[in-house]
Amino acid sequence: MLKNFLSNSVIFMARMDIDTYFMSIAELVKKRSTCIKQHVGAVLVKEGYIISTGYNGAPRGLPHCSEETCLRQTLGSLEKSHLCRGVHAEQNTIIQAAIHGVSTENSTVYSTHFPCMSCTKILINAGVKEIVYGRDYDLDNEIKMSMIRDAGVRVKKLLLTD
Image (cartoon, rainbow, N blue to C red; front, side, top):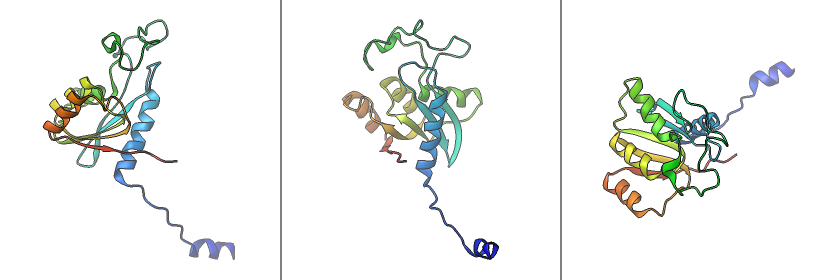
């Protein structure tokens, strides 16, 4: 009787939308971050497929960030950012695509955090046409926001739930 019940019962689960899918992957990617201050993950998508991923941390082949190597551990998020030895997640997605010879033109970046000014400029030059982000970061930077508007880059905030 249980066998008949199970074979006749169908459980439908709602399929997550594509933005939630890619943002969930960015959240997973950030778990590889080696930054001691903040973990950020990013996924670069083109035509519905992942072309690269990235997380923030020290450049390839260098020791991971630590209390001994971080010059900014007691500073605020935007304070003296030029002292940071880490490469940002969004930068790493562009770098990985370049290493593997994949065009980033007309792509979308899914990032756990809104990109900083440097990443914004890199994403614009890489041809990224949409930024989907999860957490606010430096949104009151009018120069950065103006550049995004002028470049015609779409922006969408996506808060994940669960």
